[in-house]
Every structure is written in structure tokens, then in C-alpha cells.
Length: 281
Length: 279
Picture (cartoon, each protein chain N blue to C red):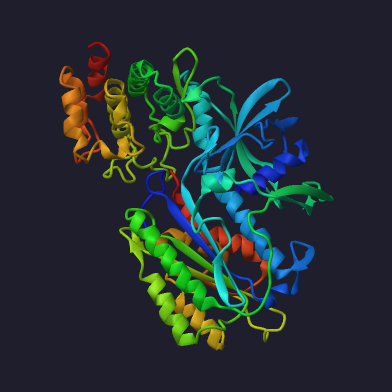
């Protein structure tokens, strides 16, 4: 299980569920710059898409190794933020996108710090409004992943990464548990869908130690929401062990949850969450 | 050391040459869209760069490559004309907050065997496929006559020069009796399921047989081409059909049946290749 290589015939799939509720308008400092949480989230997600395109880069073209889905949930609905629910990495690369100039501070080898401007493509724009219909997002994710698994029965199973800073407002904890269980029950011949939850810290939360990819012995925060996210997150297969052990210095097996994560570590957490990219051949 | 992303390498190269510890004047080359020219490899991206008037391929390792030093020293010592020999530079490229390891390859004019195969199939000039099949068989025979094996033989790791001569790149999985295994077991589907962590003079046998039979089959019937042909050859019903294509060459039939063996070693492989070449 979880051993399928990702090839042009056996593509991989990554689906991101993004909480775009009103609380994402909170201002934070991300990579040394002041912005809203939703802007930071959009930057991290755009960066992940670019990395996925880069990893699929072959001579003179981008090879069709991945399908990407992005679902935003806010107000009362969950909707795809891309033109189609699933878009191939080739289509994303060929899509005309606006670019954003980012001012980044870099430390040079001699210790000097310089400001550089880099151009980044933007597939999604930041948004923040209303409530947190996470239940609807899980329902949409299930429909999308069910059809994907039917079309790609021998592929590495889809990886669903849910990024949120709050609790669902359209479903109870039990309902979220059942929806997540239903989502995780989807499978290809290579294993069950993997659901990862990244909970972003908020300055309004009670201070809680961050929790990254806990194993069975890791104490969970004394917090109902953390417990729920732990329960609905997938146990991670062996392929993740080395990268997580390097990050947490704890032994496997790990659970696919990061609780109270800072935005600055989001890019790194997404890189681990999307490790199926390492299975491209 | 955390894995370095390709985005980070691109940002670094765009900053200019000051980011290298010893190399001076490294300039990335750009595609028509203004992006650095690169391909993604399993260990990291490989950029096309220029230093002065000379072109190079710069392989940037996402993880430490320190354990590859003995292997790269051996490559320099062997200095085989079949191998494009790189210089491994440890802690060379400043990325973010630390140095990454790189390997600098002299630029070789030509295309990979993978690119050539797709190009000739797409352009309908399928008569070129027989040349590729022969060229590969000759290369494989020369490899088997030597003391080393490539370890990750696949069409993407073979450069076809304009003259038709083939040379090997990316030898980080090389076998040599003086080396110990570096934990790199080749790339599926070019690896026999039973090879696992074997590290001996037979590690290229299966990939040689698979690539050779695929190329000869395609040279006879180009319509067989599908992305999964090389995966399918040993296991699916295509084998019986391809055997009929090879009916005038018993050595190719023998090579094809060797793919179905439970053993990753193929007996008398070089002799079989010689017979195919001289048929």
C-alpha cells in the first residue's frame, strides 16, 4: 500500500480545502511582512502549486503528473477556486495568471541582508468573509475525490489538506467526524485517501503548544477541537516517516495533523503534506 | 537538513553569482518565457547554466550529497568515455540560510533517449527508432564489458549525441566493486522487483533488457507506443504479441522472456546483445 509511483499514466492528486472565513482577515506577520492570514495562505498555496509544476518539469515541457483541486469555504458555501474542480498541473502551468511582486529579505553567505523582489504567479487570490462551512467543504471534497478515484484506480490515493483557523460552523463535531470518515474511506488500489488537517494559530486562541504530526505517545492539547482534528486526520504511511522525524525528532507512526501551526511554517508543512511528489518517476 | 524546494533554488539562481562558494560567474540560461531552464530530477533540479562562454548542467541536490564523494572521486578516476563526469561540489550554493551541494556537468550537445524516442514517434520519422535501438544495444554492451554498472539506467539518463553516440549521465547509483551501496536502487519500472537492495554487476541487466526490447519492438511497430509500454512489457499480454514481432530474431525473443524471470540477473546478457547487434 502507498507504494504506487506517480507517472503520466498513474497521476497523483492533491486537494486543498481552504478556510476563507472572516477570521482569515486577521493581520499577521508572514516571512517578515505584515499581511492578512488569507494573503499568507494564498501565497503558501500559490507557492505549492508552483513547486508541483516545477517538480513535473521535463525537457521543454511540463509533464502531466498531477491533478490539483482547490476548494475555498466561507460564508455559506464551499466552491472550487479553480476553473475546473480538478485541473491538471499542465493546465495550471498553461493558464495565464496574474503575477505578484514580492519583496523578500535574503541573508547572503557573508551575513549581509538584502531585499530582493521576486515575481510569483497567483492562481488564487486572498479572500476572507463570513463563517466556516467546513462540513460543506468535506462533502464537496468527497464528491471530487470519489470521481477521481474511479478514474485513477491504480494511482497513489488523493491527498486532501484542510487548512483552517477555526471550527466548523455548519456541522457539529460528530457530523464533521462522520464526513471526514466518509472522505477517508475513499480509496484507490494503492490505499485509502489521506486527510491532513493544518490548524493555524490565532492570536485570540488560548495559548497552546503547537502540535506537529503527533505519534501515539504525544499528549494532545486539552482542547476539544484539537482532539476532533486528531481523530479525523489520517495515520500517515511509512513514506512520510523520514521527513517528519527530521522535523519532530519523535518516532513514527504519525498522524496527519498540525495544530496551532504558525503561518511561517505553513510552506514547510505543505511540503511534507504533499510528499507524494517524491513518487514522481 | 530539510529538503530544499525547486522554488528556492530558482530564487537563489536569480539572485546572481555571489551565492556560490567557489564557482564564479555562474549565469542561468532562460527559456523563451524568461524562466531559468531546468528539468526536475529525483534528487533535485538540473539547471542549464553558463560560466564565461562554456555551458554546463548544474545539478542542485535537495538533500546532502556528502555520502556521494567517494563515488564521484571514482568517476573522475575511471574517466570513462561512456560517462559524462561531473564535479561534485559540497556546500557550494547558498540557499536560504545554508549551503546546498551541487554537481557541475560539462554540457553535452544532444538530447536524452527519452526525448529522442518521443520526438521521432511524434514526428512520424519512425525509421530513426531502429538506430536508437542499435545505439542503445551498443552502449549496453560496452557497459557490460566494463567493471562498473550505472545503477539507474533509464532513457532519461542517456544522452544521444548528434552523431548517434550515447553517453550516460546521473551516475549517483553507480556500482563498482570498490564502492559500498549508497541506498539508491534505480527507478521503477526499470528495476526488477527482485533486485531490491542488490548491489552487484547484474543491477543493470533488467533495465538493459527492458529498454532494448522496448526500442526494438517500437522500431518494428511504432503504434505500440503508450506511456506504460515499458511497464507493461514484462507482465501483460503484449509480451506474446511482441514475441511474434521478434520471430526472426531468437535472441530478442530470449531477451523478452528473460523479463518474465523471477531472477534479476540475466545469464550471458552481453553475449545476447552481441548476437542481436550482429544479426
